[in-house]
Amino acid sequence: MQLDAYIRENKLTDEGFARLLGPNVSEWAVRKWRYGQRIPRLAQQLRIAEVTHGAVTANDFVAAVIAADQRRVDAGASGQPEVAA
Image 1 (spheres, rainbow, N blue to C red):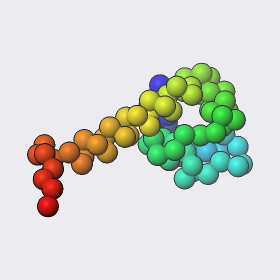
Image 2 (tube, rainbow, N blue to C red; image 1 turned 90 degrees about the vertical axis):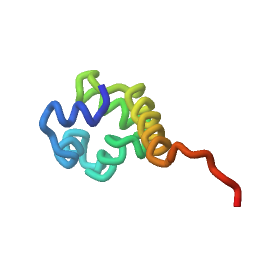
Image 3 (cartoon, rainbow, N blue to C red; image 1 turned 60 degrees about the horizontal axis):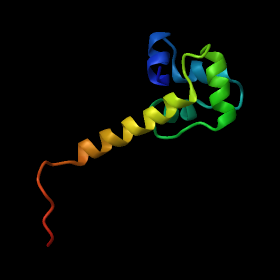
Image 4 (spheres, one colour; image 1 turned 90 degrees about the horizontal axis):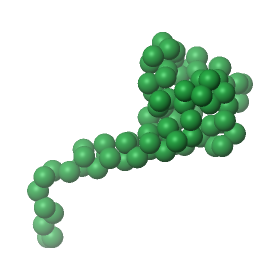
């Protein structure tokens, strides 16, 4: 399960989830992880897996980054081949 789905399913806010992880985690960090802009460090990934009782794992972060990259590619694709000037 991806972090975004876990947070929505459990009716948490980014700030609330950050508090569950501990005092050294900001809501901004959670937001970046949630939307695939960053991957948490290994220690943070382990803590997330612990807090979510294994519902969110390290593999889920890799999948989120791949999905975010694909969305960026799709948003930039016009369907027309680029023409050199």
